[in-house]
Length: 394
Image 1 (tube, helix red, strand yellow):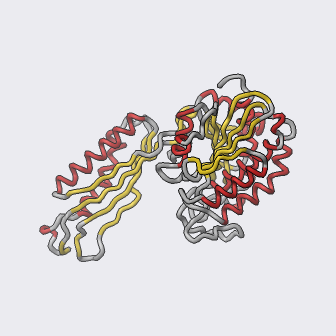
Image 2: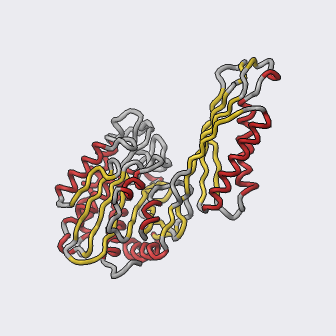
Image 3: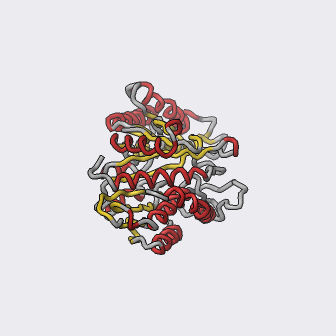
């Protein structure tokens, strides 16, 4: 659309300002009241129809174009994480123990910029653009599923989303057809043994020994039970037991995650973990409580929309800055949108080693190269305009 790139350039200082406001004022999943109000007020001021409280604190903004066409949806997530912000910049979080450590503030600000730029050109817009501002991406069950159940995708023909990603360099964009991000499952295990004196182990059932044995045994799920050409990860992330040097712990608490792309692999890993826990505890005379929680499905991009990404990305940024992404073992509830309508999820590089922007997502010193928001705005706007103006689904 003529003049759109120039307008996004003009709006970039506003986008940065919105992002920094949101970074100072983060809200956890399912508590995004002020963030949602901030977004809704801006959308309404720009003449965009807004549905509030969609599936929780979600928002659906609808921009109706002046010409007939299809309807494309763009999504941004709004929630923060329970992490203390350790940066020293003037826009660091003002909320103790809460920060935007994954870029959702920037996703929201970027989509606001796209919404404003497109709203100013609505008379020339072919089709409709739906703006999905989603709550609770960081928590399972996430906000995508409840927003869809509340009708967020009604009438939508295609959906697109972007994640600003610091492992990739700013100025570059990434996507892949088929599976892009993994299904992130989790398990919580309590081993119940028999506590006692550290000098009299024969009178106890040592939950720490059982837990330690399981940590090692669980690594065989991938190495010996899953086809080696199928990606899968089993990680124990939390292990807590005991209170004293001379007391054998009665209980041991463990938490972990399982990541996979294939449904068969996912269920085989679950089955094998349950077996290992049961047999190991039985062998040592312990009981247990195991909660195995299936998370989001994998993010699976539609091939034709990946082709759209390549075509548009190369036109905007040049072929040398458009890449096929490797599969990413992180999870994303954008997967639910792609189960309902065609579309794709994309990564925009947001790292910049020269500026010290190198910390990974969910790190207390996480930050982004804010120029990445300008790249993301161009990509999102162009993907939506192209899809809304298409004669049929691609």
